[in-house]
Amino acid sequence: MGHREQLLAAARRLLEEKGYAHITARDLVAASGTNLHSIGYHFGSKAGLLNAAIGEVFEEWTDKLAQIAMADPAATPVERGRRAWTAMLDSLPTTRDLLLSYVEALAQAERTVSLREQFAEQYRRCRGKVAALVAESLGDGTDPADPRCQAVASFVIAVCDGLSVQWLLDPDGAPSSADLTEGLAAMWSASFPS
Image: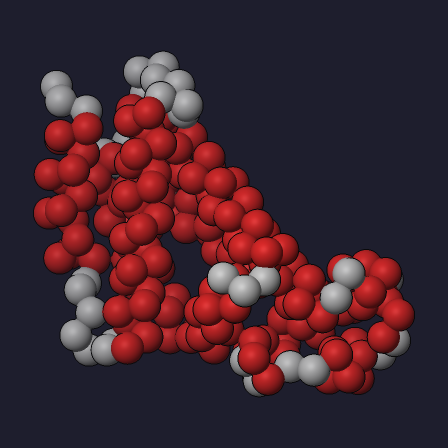
């Protein structure tokens, strides 16, 4: 494992242990066994490293939920959405610390142009992945670039983000996946009428 990978692994551990706002460059160097120069060389800054680590987690979580959603080829689009939301809700207790770090980083994005651009690019990639899954779920040759697929993808991501924040604040009061299924069914019917 090279310095870049060592730094990313250390950043992920520290995001869980200390939170985004409390990690220093020296923490990253100590946890990775690298040096301060390596952070600048590979990521430009401490924030660049932390943002890259958060981006990796974001991408992995998206891919994991996509695999779960698409596991049953016979599932309806609504059932796929329900499965993804159930998996997301079930994973929240084990990903709570990383989710908190993500929210802390989002709060910094307004004042850090590079962070805002990085998060915007992550959301663009995520929307593209989800739109492709929506098109695949339709099974009728609809292109993922179809505005309806993009709208459904944006809706699904907004629900996941919103549900995650609600869960952070009130785990017992946050909606369940069953609560969301009805909303997904109504949205799907309106987006893709028979």
